[in-house]
Structure formats: structure tokens, C-alpha cells
Length: 365
Image 1: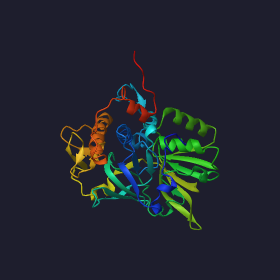
Image 2: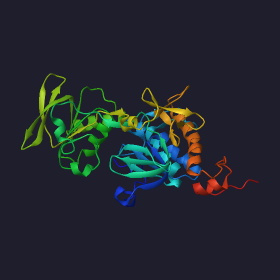
Image 3: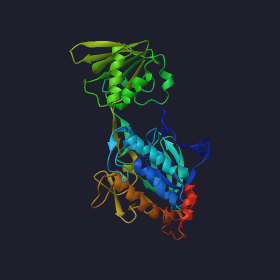
């Protein structure tokens, strides 16, 4: 399950909060496609970026909700998946060496006396930034929880909504709930590694890739795993630990399924979270931008791009977010380099940009 975009350049030990706050030119809140492209546009202007996201991997909605679904409206790419788009963006921004701080959300954002910004995350990382660009999409994603009374006390011990260390579950009795790509991918991955794998979904209709569904059915026929149509409605405990889950089947029969680890992949809910407490001007749970020439919010030095923002004529398209990121970069440059005149340069002909990208300047006859 490890992919190239699970672990881009993550914060090194010297970036941890106990070593003091990180001084940054720019902090980008959100690592979806628009946040990633924002790294590129800032990089062209020689602005280094730190990127913070609540998810444990980059890619935002594209990776969490439809990694293998086709996207048709990216310029010069007739069709590509969310996974391919994320991978391409990571390759594109690699020369600028952004640092990612994943699995944490920005909890506080405050103006400093020197006009820079103090930020702190849910994991205690602290930043001092000259400018902040919010590319948080529809907000921080939180997993949809299993609605069974009392089962939440096992979360983080036997109940999991995300998998960070899959090796911990080898040799265990696994029950995996869900009918999407995440549920199927993990079920297939654990077959042969776990003692047993039982996939539970409320209906025969699965939302995963056809190839994954076909492989799952073949493994069930070979008795390598089991698929139960039904829903978890209760559980049993032995010795203080979750021992069985009760699965109410579509056939009216409630089955008791032994379990060491229960994994739930019901999708994600977008939550604005702490953004609403930052004192920024909002409209219908979106950030208002005061100037569409730079996509700056009402707070000087803070910009909003992508689905998180609103302005007259706003269209929620990845394409629109890319355009906004380009203009926001020039707006941000005025705060990062207040004494420097920023010139418009072209990637085709500029030796300066070629040096930033690590490519040779072509010679035309």
C-alpha cells in the first residue's frame, strides 16, 4: 500500500516543535492538487514552502475519495486519475523541495507584532510565516465513524479508521467494513498476511475498482477471505478486549464474527475545523477573497485558493484553483520580498527559472 505520494519530503527531526518554531517564507494549509500546484507557483518566484495537511498522505479529495476515477478537465491531459494527477504534481514540484507536515491540522493562526504569522498544529509544530496560503479545499477530512454504541472506546487499539502501520495487523483476525477502494485495497493487501480477513458491506453493490472486486470474489471462492453483506450492529468483549462483532445480514441472520482488529472505511467528512476561529471573513463556510487579482483575504498576507474560497463568479474546478494559485503566488511575493520588484518570467525562456527547476536553458538557432 505504500505509494510515492504517501511519503514525500516529510518534516525532519530538526523541524519538530521542541527545536523551536520553524521560520518559513510561506505556509500552505492543504496538500490537495491546488495546494501542491501552489508550491510550484511559489517556487518559480524563489519562495520556499511548508505544507500542512490533516491527512496522512498528500492529494486531498483526489486521493482520499477517487484515486482511480478518471478526471477529464486538466489541460493537455485528456484523461488521468486522481492518483496520476497527484503523482504528476509531486514530480513537478520536486525541484522546489517543499516540506510536508502531514496528519495534523493548523489549530491556531495569529498575527505577530512584526506582521508575520504564528501558526501551531494539532501535533505541536510551530511556524513563523511571512505569508499563509489556505488551500484547504472543503476543509479537513475526518473519517465517518461506526455508529455502534460503546465501540469507540476501542479506537486506536482495536478499532481503526486509517492504517498507518499495516505490519501490526499481520497474523490477526481482521474485519474490514466498507465497500469502496480503501476497504477493498486493504482487504486484498492483508490476505495471506492476516490470520483471517472478513469484508463487511451493507450491500452487494461495491464502489471499488472492478479489478479489485473481481479479485475479492475470486479469493472468496478460494476461501482465502470472506465477504458478508450486512452491517456491524454490536460487539462482544472478553477480558476487556473486543472479541466478536455482531453482523446483521441482509438475509435477516445476525452472525458473530471473531475479531482482533476492526477497520472501518466509510469515507471521509469534510470539516472546516479551526479555520472558523481564525477571524477571517467567511460566507457560507467559505473564505471571502477581497481581491481576485491576488486572492488575498481581508487579512493582509493571508490568501485563499481552491474550493475553500468564494468570490463573484467562483467555479469549483481544479482548473480554477490552479489559476488562483498562480496569481496568489505573486501576491504572496510582495510579503516575502517586500523590497524586491517581482518580474513576470516565462518557464520556456528564463535562465533563472531553468536554474530553479534544475534544467538546461535551450539554445534556439
